[in-house]
Amino acid sequence: MNKGRKPDILCIGAQKAGTSWLHVALATRRDIWVPPFKELHFFDHKFIAECRRWAPWHVKQGLQGARARHLASASPPDEAYLAYLDRLQTAPILNGTWYKYIFSRAPEDQKCLDVTPEYSCIPDEGVDFFRRFLPQSKLIYLIRNPLDRLKSQLRMNAHRRKKLPSSPQEWEELLDMPALRMRGDYLNNVPRWSAHFAPDRLLYLPYGQIGKDPLSLLRKIEHHCGLPASEYPQAAERVHQTAPLQLPDYVIERLEELAAPQAAFLRTHFGESFYQET
Image 1 (cartoon, rainbow, N blue to C red):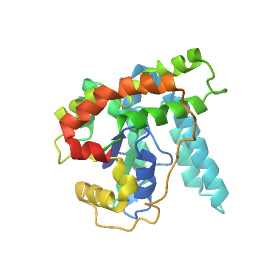
Image 2 (image 1 turned 90 degrees about the horizontal axis):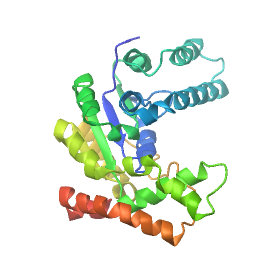
Image 3 (image 1 turned 180 degrees about the vertical axis):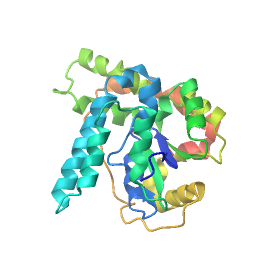
Image 4 (image 1 turned 90 degrees about the vertical axis):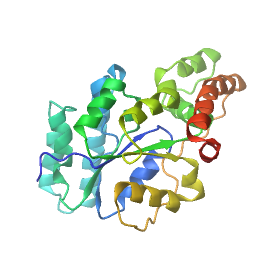
């Protein structure tokens, strides 16, 4: 067991842009090791105050889910693995020692993966720390059409409530959530990451290729991460599709206003052909 392991490959965003699909696809590879649960939140917990309110809860939920899955599938249970999960719930959590311990069970011949879309939102000092903490890791940033991404995130947030919004005031509360803007704020997030990471370290990919040609997109990721070509039996399957919900016209108008500067930035920064693929 190597207690000092760190991830070799990280998908840093964006939320509702195919990160769960990527996590599932790469997890099928024999040379990739994935943690017991998706979204570790180490860097955003460290640098975003709002994330510190709920990241420990997410870790607890993820570990409980991992334990339940193991007990349902393993006979007899792996006591060493259960002890490892227990250790990850023991305070202090979400510090550097905890983060490196997560990857301690990974075999030496496997690359470690962390998929946490909130990482794309960390401030400049966080990105600089990220670069110094992970001097050789490869990064992937999935970019989705801003309006489509906003709609998907808003629907997800609405479904997470005890009761679906039914009044302008309730919709306004959802529209005013800082995370709605922050997690798809390409205009500010992309330049910040690009200032610290050259293209050989950070790969931007359009979300639309997942539906049109998922294998081609995965080949680009393999090349970027130094992985041999592999088969992906679940590449064409949808993962965590947001439940449908009719958005009022006035809500869509607000989302269009939020999306417009983001779309203009993507066209300017990546080019029209890349934007059309988002």
